[in-house]
Length: 303
Length: 275
Image 1: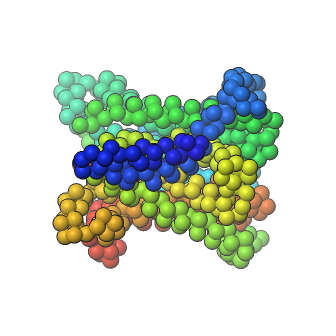
Image 2: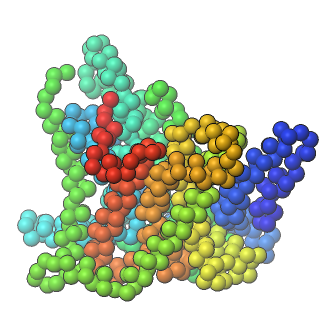
Image 3: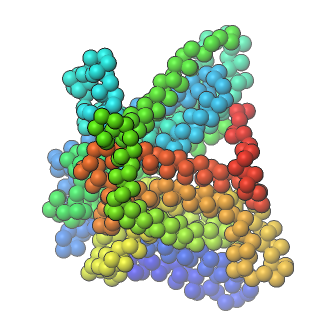
């Protein structure tokens, strides 16, 4: 690790002393050294350490055992739970955000409605973590206001229908509170990018509203929607504090398992913990990279 | 298409608005019910009278402020230098600054605990001070994507190379150029990034909990397990706090260099109107 951290400064330390022009290059590199040093020490170094540990056994010898151990039933179960929860909440967020965006931006509502939603979404997309869990306990928990109102005013017992805030479905509704506004914010520019000329052209050619969306609107939007979906997926996948505050440590999504492992080695194998971390980073990395690729593709239409 | 009343759109907007607002109303109402049989601010009073609340919020505020300061000291010169001298490195710096979005906090802190553990080459977790340092450093890392983007946007809005040349031809040293010319011009951008960082790190739970620091996030979780009404009060307050941070962030992000401060508060230019 020491080698890693000092590598960039070693590069700069040896500028070829020939002309003043080349010495400038040496100086120029020096200007970004603090940033690279910091990043290597506190971001890249720690992650590389975990990645290296994922391929070692307790004695430090190279092995694939930890990666293979990721296939054990309880770990597969938590990855599956995490992925299913993230998929469901991303799907709900994407569909609801798209519908809301369509209504507010293209639906012929006054501009102040859109501004209000934009401002609110900026706040709500950051309102995650512990306070969000508290808010939903006060709303849809067993003694939450909405639960109690439904029972007292309409005689409707929400919890008798099988609904439970502290469950898979309940959690995905809580996630929707930050996923929906995030989707609204990132889909808005794409909806703005749908040119009026396209709709007019389609109308002149005799297309119905439905045909316009089927053949022009949605195909143009598809890369953006898919990209946003992946971003929401990654957003949900990395969420820990909200789950922990709502469910305690009993709900085995991957971040919670890793959290428990760091606290008390519940997997009885530190190197398996490294492999778990590697798995998380891999999933986050793939979905974010695909998001960036899809975003670049979508920007074709926005020129 | 004939203009008709946008019935479906209104319905959808109302539905969205109520999904956003009902939990807030419910939480607020719940937070007022602490004293049996009447509505009042007892839960809020109870929160503010708690020494733990004041201590943890103070600790988290200080940690976040230091993180913002360090973040600015690292990011501003880097963004400046990359734009001015080494544009080739720009994709690399940008990629690194975005990495924290891919590395979840729980993984980052796991790496810290192992790499800087008590019998490692740099045993930061062995002392209280070292652990505080790690927490602050972690917040700096988590804020890098937002800080870099805010500062880089700020730099894009001003003509850095002309400003630098002007400063240099007047005989200013490099350090002086950065501190008295560049920095004041991107101050609004830095502050804008700072408010976002602040809103993220004050209530942060994972790093603080796993590094075992007396921060606000772990206190919140503990409170949620022990009490009923105070958590609701805190949820409302933190929503208000995040709202405040976002408004200030937006204000500073759209502020042009040299623009007067007070004018901004009274007459606000219309937000991005639809083209």
